[in-house]
Image (cartoon, rainbow, N blue to C red; front, side, top):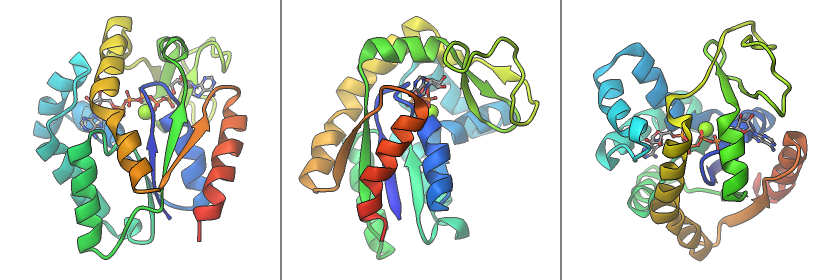
Length: 216
Ligand code: AP5
Ligand code: MG
């Protein structure tokens, strides 16, 4: 199954991606995670991406697309994948469509996680990520009082772009550049919206219910 998750920052794309990808036994490919790994590894790509990410702006398309092309060419992505955070504007979506066509592939489904702006700000202000296994936590909703990952014992960190003003800018960027994708994929007839509020497990159940009919 070839699946895309779309939704504003903090909608729960990364949280749901870890469960959905494991349910479907497909790799989860998050452009944000790949950029952050490059930032912490100090690579040239990381240095470039950081200047955009810290402001909450999109990294230029040519850089992002080349990175995704490389990742999708890998062995584990040949029979399916879940994309989290890509595409993020219409030009990226068009190039993805053409790229998959060249490989005689196509997207099966685009799942939109629907949540309002206030909830987003609340979720991102309390987000913590494990520096070792990447598991996503929330100080309030997961009742995390320490900075230790319950899954692997790694140390949790707060993302640099989760400051409130940067979050607000990321929301503007979403409205201006990413939300047109909703129409783009609705016209391609592969868009399904899911209410992303309520407990994480309930959202996963709703998402899996929406996905099943498309999962061959
Ligand atoms: P990226 O990493 O993709 O960030 P984002 O889209 O802003 O989304 P987030 O990761 O912030 O939110 P999420 O939806 O994954 O929510 P999460 O599951 O963590 O991108 C970062 C940057 O990289 C971009 O700004 C850009 O610069 C660059 N970039 C990436 N892709 C790019 C591209 N294609 N083109 C150009 N540039 C690109 O959940 C958030 C919090 O809420 C967590 O604490 C979680 O525990 C909690 N939570 C989740 N679900 C629930 C729930 N149901 N109830 C309560 N709490 C919940
Ligand atoms: Mg994410």
